[in-house]
Image (cartoon, helix red, strand yellow):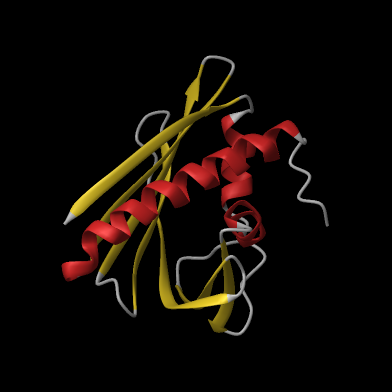
Length: 154
């Protein structure tokens, strides 16, 4: 297994960042246009994440099918000032996609961290490279989202 970790500073209140993380619409927004997620089971994502499992189809650049992913949302107790949520997931080709998002106060804003542990057999090196690109993209989109006042454009 290999772990990828990326962090960024967001000039926003940690409570606001946590609120946005809890909305599946934010995941869909920050993942575009690199990955599009389409719910399979249940057929629609909730307004706010609940501790549950969600099967989604994934499309690279919104068009190239790249399989399905089971998103396993787990709420975690805060550790001091650090709040986190876990997606203990897996997919058609990926045996382990254990993703933790951490939010902690940092200066006048928030330290946002993505940490994912990956196991995909012989595909692990390629999946790790993709994870670095994907989370870098998501964090860039998070910074844009904060700069827009959390306006997802509809």
